[in-house]
Image 1 (cartoon, rainbow, N blue to C red):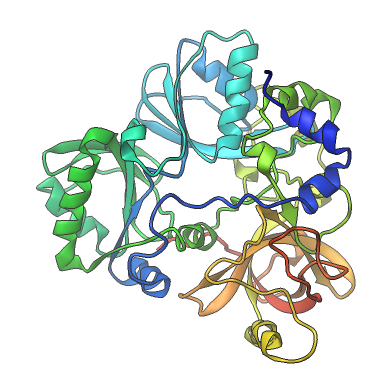
Image 2: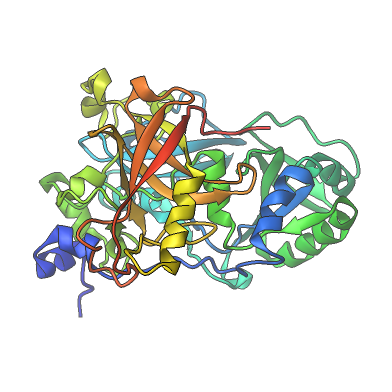
Length: 447
């Protein structure tokens, strides 16, 4: 029996908007303990001492090998690949033909003509599709899917960050670390085991993401935890993982721009209905009835600096033709504390109830989008909120009109869905709430 495709699912449903806005929400559960202590202390630790984050289980890893690997990646990505090669990493963004983002991931190149794509599966699936259907001499060697079992994975992947991270690494390495500039790769030791590392600040504080063979992963972890005791090392759990993304400025909850358009039909026919793309859900106050309003450009997500027109790639013509006023800017919004308190207080009153905000992350759907207003004028869109212990406030990343992306700009965010809420089972009946927000023009925090 043939596997149902995403296109089959869309055709059978008959109403794409309802399928995505009113359908069931398949929440991604991080295959790791939600909390090792409590999520407040786990957030505090990355500012005051050092944190250990086990990223071995929740990301998709796709391994590509062959003489056409770089050509394939260049044909699809907005990034330039001039000078890209062994021991280099790159945040990678792919778009559809209209210049809307399908997904992003991190590329790791350890040797010539061999690259791994690590992250959410949307970008990797788009690359796999073209590797299989295009004229490329590329082998897709291995796909590591999310799993709670390290034995199911080729690599362990850990992250250690915080003010004490360098001291801990030097002790484990038996001496000073090699100089590894930001977002560059290098090698050092964790006890007797050599690891490959990326200087990567997911929480905004110094540290490294590093990996090695899964068969020594538990031993490496135990060495880190033991040595980390003197530095007050804290393990962080799955409830805090999405907060690190929001704090560091990464918008991970965007609808991949694949559900409409004839040029994307063949891809939808290739994707299984049970793929992550086939299990997407949207929500929020941006309830326009048009799925394409949930698509974002690289400029909206802060990736404009990555767009390089030194090569041909899918979406280039659309991005080149984009007018300046179409390019939104990514910012952080700090939510008014009293308005947030009012949302919680409504649960304890006899009147209307506002949409609840779960802490530390208020994502009740996979790809939420809420309207941002100045007065009555729509000026942008906000993504799901997270509670930042550093700010003692709810924050969200947003894409807003560039002339309003200045510190202290006051705007309004509409929290909740219209008409009492959608048909999603994750949405209780509620009324919408206007939340005052203040713009922080620098959403990426590095310390």
